[in-house]
Length: 308
Image (cartoon, rainbow, N blue to C red; front, side, top):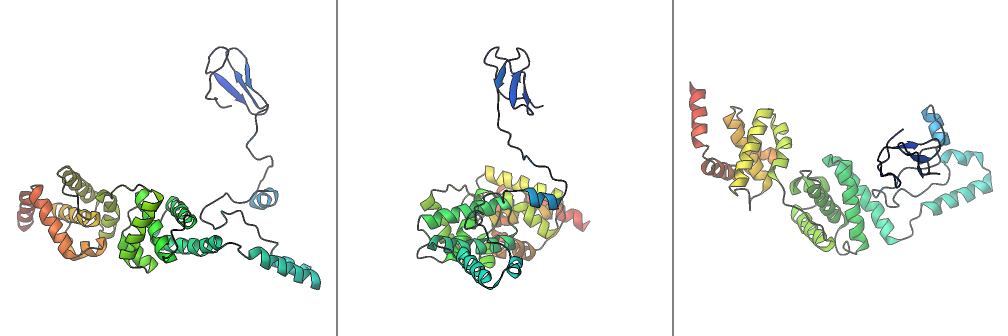
C-alpha cells in the first residue's frame, strides 16, 4: 500500500491509503472512499523468463525521436516466414515487404539518413543518451522548419549535436565534432549559430570547469590537482579573467598551473594536445593567471623546494 498525495474532501486528512486490488483510495481517518474504479497501469500478464516475456508482451518499444518514424514502424513478418509460403504467396509477401519498407515523404527520407549519421557521430564521441535524444529533436525541428535546405545534412547534424552538448553541459569542442563528422569546424559553428537562432534555443556560455575532469583524466592527474584547478578557475571567474576567452584554453591553463603547484609536471605541449589548443594559448593564459591571481610566489617556492 502506498500513500496518495491528496487531501480528503470530508475531513481534510492526508492519511490516505490506496487499495490497488480494488482500485480505491480510502481515507484512514473517516473511511470515505475518495476514488474508485481506478485504472491499473501495470501489466496484466505474468512472465517468468525472457521467452515468456517476448511471447506475452503485446506492445513494442517506447516512442523515441532517434528514429525517423519515432519507433512506430512495423515490419511484415520475418525472413524465416518466406520458406513456409508457396510460389504466389512468396511473391506477394516480397511485394508487401518492399512497399512497407519504402519511405513516402522527403522529410522521412532525410531523417532516416540524418539520424543514422547522428548516431554514428554520437557513438564516436561517446555521448549520453539524453544528448542523442535532444539533438535528434533539434534536427527534426530544423527539418520541419526547412532550415536544412541549402546546407549539408552532416553540418546540420553536427550543429544539432553541438547545441545539445552545450545545453546538457556535456563538454565537447568544435574540433572534436569536426574530427568525428568530417566537417570544417567553422561550418559547424555557423550552422550551430543559425539553427539555435532560428529555433530560439537559449544556450548559456560554456563553463571551463566542465572540461577539467576529461582533461585531467587524459593527463593522468590526481584529484588534488583537479580540485586545485577548480579553485583557480573560480578565482579567475571572480576577477572576470574567463570572459572573452576560450573555455578550453583557460581550463587547460588552470590545470597546467595546478599541476605545477602540486609537483605533477606536465609539459605545455602535452596539455595543449589534450585540450586541442596551441602552446601559445596555454602560455598566454598561464601568464595571465599567475599574474592576476598572485601565484608567482607560490610557484617560485615550489621550484625552490624541488631544487632542495
